[in-house]
Image (tube, rainbow, N blue to C red; front, side, top):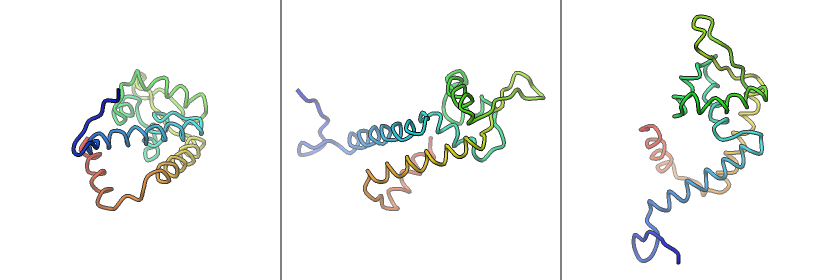
Length: 141
């Protein structure tokens, strides 16, 4: 027996459709990132580091909505691949600072293009009004 949420005339409601679409986008993002040796969290970490010389692990975790402990294995993998460097802060040895390497910038750019290409190929063209609305929702978080 299939259980569905029905809004009208036996069709799923917009809320359920958006959830399903979001799951599919995330599945595609995971696959595209993995094809470049990254997790989606690893890709997000590289993206967050692009515009700063370095960031503390705590600040990076906060920007990604994670705990520093959750981010540790992600950073270990990125460091092992030469995509980031981790160093103790000279002023406060308790703080670990993270910086993206040139290899990390290259991998991020390649993976980000692949993700965008895959997602935009799958999705129909989004009208500017819808893109603006989704961007406002994302900014409210």
